[in-house]
Image 1 (cartoon, one colour):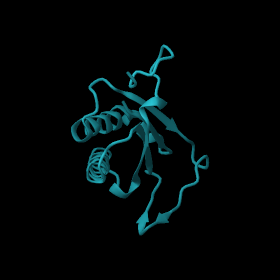
Image 2 (cartoon, rainbow, N blue to C red):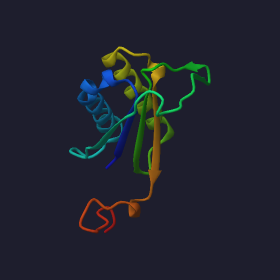
Image 3 (cartoon, helix red, strand yellow):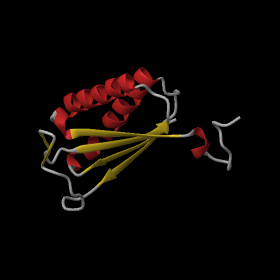
Length: 127
């Protein structure tokens, strides 16, 4: 079950939250076989000046449409499946929001099953 944080500074995206969330979630389901219904998605809007991001990095130029997606989940995915996930999310969001694919950055953070409790003070992933 992933925990997804989506950061952005363009307030035009406020009305596009569902599109962004559905895109990230459906990509996780399709490529990484994430459990159905496992939607823990949080949006973080920052006013201009509240975030510092580079104008350019690794020959990629960023605009005020920059979206940063952080996905935290159990470890165990291959490099190839992660690459497929990154591309699918970036491509779909860029098309649906009419922004550059370069403005979609993703970080996948993996951890151990013992690091999760979904309530009740229990470790649901640990038998």
